[in-house]
Amino acid sequence: MRCLACGKLLRARDSVINGYGPVCYQNIFGKDLKEKKREKDSERLQLPGQISMEEMLLGRK
Ligand SMILES: [Zn+2]
Image (cartoon, rainbow, N blue to C red):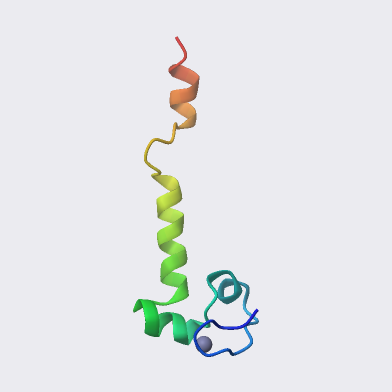
């Protein structure tokens, strides 16, 4: 996998997943890879329409 912006070989797993090296990613999106990762984690916790475990247990009437 190579960086989509500069063609540099990507070695870090996060960079490969995103398709850009950390420097190019920051240039393009204005934030670093770790910041994006953190956003993803919080998105996963509060996904709209997602049924929580509690709702699954209590909501089946
Ligand atoms: Zn690059």
